[in-house]
Image 1 (cartoon, helix red, strand yellow):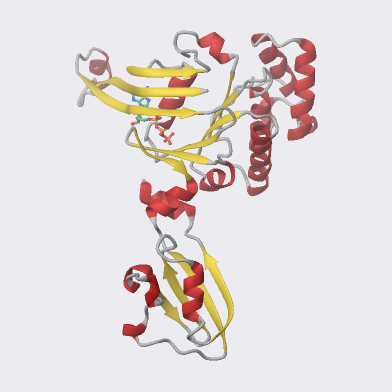
Image 2 (cartoon, helix red, strand yellow):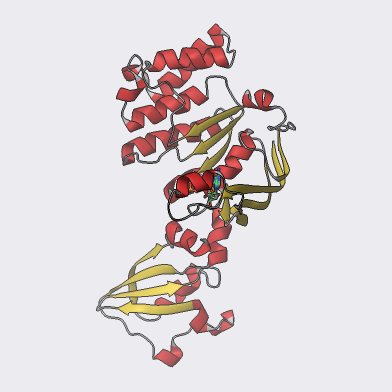
Length: 334
Ligand SMILES: Nc1ncnc2c1ncn2[C@@H]1O[C@H](COP(=O)(O)OP(=O)(O)OP(=O)(O)O)[C@@H](O)[C@H]1O
């Protein structure tokens, strides 16, 4: 559905002069600096996929999205949406795309939400009965009725975001590009937007590419994630594989009934039959009167083996596992 191959984007910006009348002299400068914002990116997204596109500030996410929507021309490489090149056939592709920029509304600031929808429906040539149907559907799902007649500038951020997402669906696009759709929202508003996006994907079959700095968005919504760093893809795959690849340890808290006996340091190893190097596989990070905290790399050792090992130290009352925080995993990739 979305095919991107060998995509590059270079920006040419004038070198800013220093000293007196710097601004004016910069206007007439012949010196330029080249910035390679996107370097040789290739990926494909299938129909019905929900993919996260993440990376640190300035990594090249928005530049990629702008090339996917046809707003920017690539310096080289190719984008195909449903087999169509968005730069050459922008109008044709726009009909199949919905785009939401969390930081910028596509609605008319001084007009009531309803009027903005009328204009958008007209622009996208949506038939009146189609528009009514979709407006009703989206209005219900996103609870738009309470601010239907309110000018956009008077909406809260959460209401504005709901109105914007519904607006992007008016022409029933197959593909949605969402750039920071939960930015600045409170927990409840985030939850409602995430629930809606999940529905759009699972029930309405929309293909979604989501850009966000909120790792909870990614963890809760995306099956697959692509990480861009300095303009290049540094990872593409499932969240699970990314966790495994980074290999941060899982924290295991073991509570004992009464006292327990830790083996001597030289004997703190997993059952010999595993044939593993104990130092690599687990580490005791804290030991209290009834509780021991162990860090283990789950790629190298199974929870059952840890359980077998600790049950030899005393009578186990409870065992609790904490997977590494996804933000910490991502921090390592950045
Ligand atoms: N029109 C432009 N002219 C010159 N440089 C640009 C332009 N647009 C983007 N850049 C540069 O390209 C790089 C990538 O920018 P981009 O906006 O794609 O990053 P991003 O990953 O979306 O960042 P953020 O998470 O902060 O939004 C940055 O160094 C940015 O300064």
